[in-house]
Image (cartoon, rainbow, N blue to C red; front, side):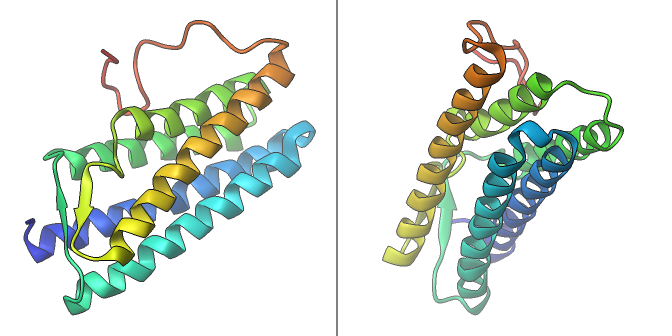
Length: 173
């Protein structure tokens, strides 16, 4: 089991991450009107994810639930992703990007969480934690699928080759 301090850090970082992604998607909604409704929907779902994390963060604080992580570098990975999202938000706000770039960035964010097994690397001692983590993993997979559909609409076909480096700066295997 992780120390209580580390458990709280991971949960707070995950909450911040979901809110940061929501902010990025809101910026994309303002910048790219063609997909405004889709970006707004994704942004609201990210807020819902953050609220779910906040609920179990409260339970972590009072000690009624605990989590453990099988991925020892998860806090560092989440922080690197937060830094990357901040950079992407600046790009979106400068309106110096194409819609396809925004979609590719969002796909990278969502797929990196899936591939790096962020939510599956956490385990909890209660049914609540298990339900929240599964809902977050499921929501992330759903977002990746929705973004693939947006990409296909934008480009006519989904990209065959993705960038070799993830948003966290780590090379994909």
